[in-house]
Length: 156
Image 1: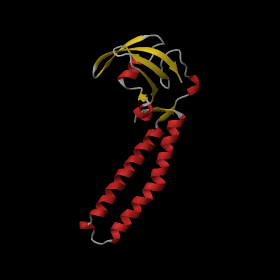
Image 2: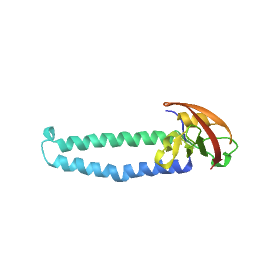
Image 3: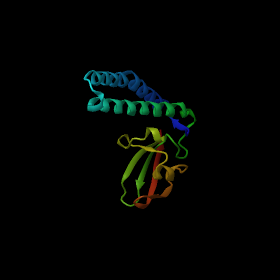
Image 4: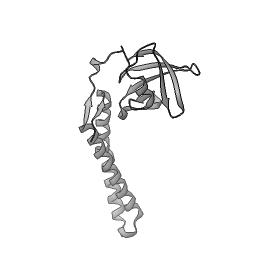
């Protein structure tokens, strides 16, 4: 299993998700299996099959999350700076083709969420920005082709 880097907040959220799945969802599925079992013949009981399938999926999800946190390394946010772009930085960049300005926070893969403008460090844009400084113009190969961005701001 690969090491996953996480913020303290990201780690806390994963631990909360594990607790929810184990303490809320697992008992719900157990009840559904018991109810379906009480209905008789299990060989033709679609409810029972569905509940057993859901139980298997849940246990797999719990196992994956536990592996993720077991192999997590917490990022020491006190060691981060804004001299050049690195993980956990918020960056404001201007697309030089259309002058559109966007802002992203570069986060770990497990914390990426485009709705919150958090992009994974493994994405082409994040990879192309890492190590660059404010004022730099970078060319990044993305699926749509070569894009040019000017780095406007680096912050937390």
